[in-house]
Amino acid sequence: MSDAVSIRQLWSQTATVLGARHEARWICEVAVSLDGDEFDRSLDEPVTERMVAHLDAMVARYRAGEPLQYVLGRWGFRRLDLAIDRRVLIPRPESEMVADVAIGLAASVPDGRVVADLGTGSGAIGLALADELPLVGTTVWITDVSDHALAVARANLAGIGRAGRNVLVAAGSWFDALPPEVRCDVIVSNPPYVADGSPLLEASVAEWEPAGALFGGPDGLDAIRALVSGAPGHLVDGGWLVLEHGMDQGEAVRALLRQAGFVHVETRPDLASHDRCTLGRWEQP
Ligand SMILES: C[S@@+](CC[C@H](N)C(=O)[O-])C[C@H]1O[C@@H](n2cnc3c(N)ncnc32)[C@H](O)[C@@H]1O
Image 1 (cartoon, rainbow, N blue to C red):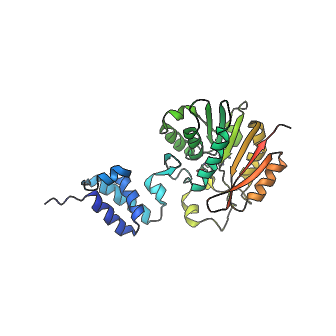
Image 2 (cartoon, rainbow, N blue to C red):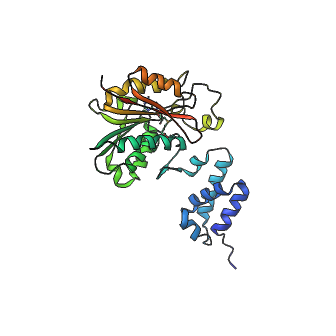
Image 3 (tube, rainbow, N blue to C red):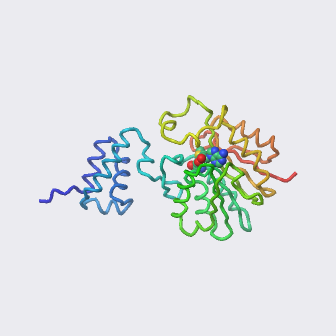
């Protein structure tokens, strides 16, 4: 009788150790390099020593408190499977909704569209835009001030197929990253928006995710102020600025947009009905 361990046994043992069946499955999928239906079809296949060693290392990291997404090294965002590590923020479901708003606005531009995702991190929002907007007539800028983040975004760009040809990567702080002549139909950003020292930030987020992706000054709005003041110089007449923000920042962000001259300013809720995304349209005075 063979004493080889099957994928099914590995999953079961991991689920027992972690007390979490879904998480155990995701870790097993990465360890055996199979997912979805292929994983299910292979449950009775034997695992190798190398797979077990990989799994043990991931289980140890997870049990030490590292977020599952970093342990797995990848995470889903809309239709994309993104490479993720500690150089970038873990993409959140709330940002999928922000991407959805930007995609809807950009898709309605009739003849070719230029969009920018400023502070792209893993590339989540910008690459989703490239992936879901028409292949023809779409240009997407993705930018970040962090070279480490851009290295992750470039790796993810390489994985999105033909839509990647529509993507331009640029380094620099907010609008400094864009060539001065670039005018966008939609600018979207999920900037750092947590107030410095906020007691509301979960301990695991503060401990594991990059500080440069989280903190936005004393009231959390420093980056949003920079984006609102710089956007008119890089939007076409009728272009849109779409901003993710904290659930208690909707009123302040609407005020900033209106003060800067944006019109049709509105805040959209996330799936938990919290204020999460505020947008405004720029019309040349
Ligand atoms: C909250 S994270 C968002 C990452 C990604 N867009 C997402 O939704 O998962 C904010 C990102 O803004 C970047 N960032 C911070 N300050 C910046 C600046 N001055 N200019 C451009 N990007 C900046 C950070 O490096 C980080 O990648």
